[in-house]
Length: 288
Image (cartoon, rainbow, N blue to C red; front, top):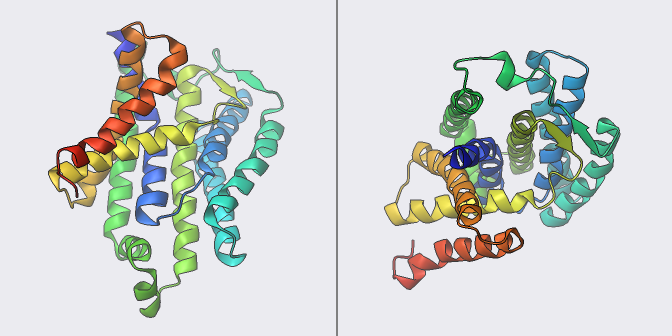
């Protein structure tokens, strides 16, 4: 049971990445590869600040700001320099590797004996259950904040930018500014995942973000499939399902390992699972 509880905890930690991918790809239609770098950035900033015994009230804003700056840089390169969004993300992600290594000062930083979010707040003596309560509250608060933002006039303008850029530009909205802000928000949420996972696992690693964008993509694909099946149009329910998608994705990985499948085949099983989720509506004729 603890095996699946750990998967649930990791799924909640990765909800930030799922939200970030949802904003960049589903709202703005921008394939943002900055995710790999901004996730690690959130982790190394958290690790570096924890080792200097800085307050959690300072660490969280610093992580969100760092991620937002990375996303905004990608947005500026894409909109102002007219560089393809995919290439802009790759450039920033590549640069962030050096930035992250400089901040961390080494390739791996253990944090096992450092006080963190999960040790400073205690609801129960069971470590995993205590972490679950904290993460659930943490993720729900951010889900509510994102949902509220997307329902405001500013959020509607963001969504309209992705749906019909020429139309919203004709209404006087600065679409470049919307894209920059959207990518900043998406990468701030991605950095938040790095902030949470580093404290949950007890270490920060320079390579922790390699391929992490697949986790976000898989989570969003799962959520999108469920949204299409149920024909959901509510922003709130969409965000809840994106969060659930991140948890389901981790449960699939946990189940795969639990039944004894070779860890070397884990990526293959994951790919097959995501393919089934995407292809099943088409096979059953229930396309959105």
